[in-house]
Amino acid sequence: MKAILIAGLEEKTNKNLRILDFTKDCEKLRRYLIRKVGLKKKDISFFDPKCILNIKLKGLLNKMSKIVFRNSNEPFLVYYSGHGLSKMWSLYEINDGRVKSYSLRFTRLMKALKDHNAPLIVVADTCFAMSLKRHMEKLRCQWMLIGLAPEGQYGNETGVLDQVIGSWLKRRPTDPKYNIGKRLVRSFKVKRYDQTKSCLLYGNDKRFHKFFPYYSFKRIEAVLRAGSSLDYLVYPKK
Image (tube, rainbow, N blue to C red; front, side, top):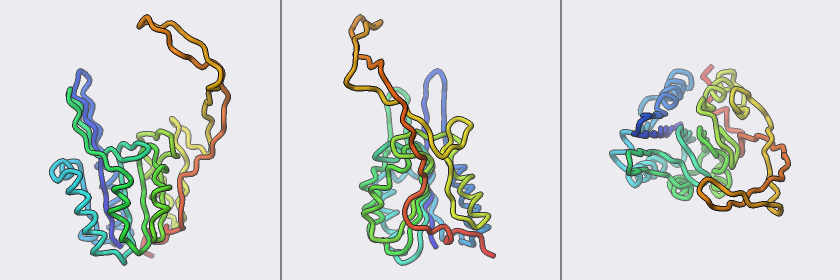
């Protein structure tokens, strides 16, 4: 088995300096794969923010494509920890007045994985994680997707990895719950505004803005896994 681990980074340079580095989760999974599953260090390709900044997005995709092509008949695990949007993973972002970022679109990610023939596990530890499902359905290999958040929903910064590893350590298929604040839930409510009823409000910018005062709540199931059941590939060795 082979693994590709990708860590994102967000850095905002302003009065309130904020740096979010997601390498710790990748390192935690790397230790698990080596100590429990029995992978060798050479079996794991780890792309941290420093590496991504050096090789840039094109270099990352080239390296991933080569790794997949050389090992197209071996089971694969791809893990990403960082920020995500509905159509891409936001790998690297610095905002110091001028935004510098690298984003990996799902269409380009699928091109890097399209030649893979063996089972593929993707753990997307990011917001909007399950948005990747519709793209993975186009792959010809067996696949499994585990995510931090449902399609169209934000995730919690605590991540989903602890839930995933916790299940695998017990040799059970992982079925993580959605983390809302400090609650792990199987379903949640979202507010749906009635787009047919609106009124105008006068704002501080001295302009009228459309406002929708009528709304209802809809309950959504938090499904955070899709595809084939491939957990057995990353169970601890007996």
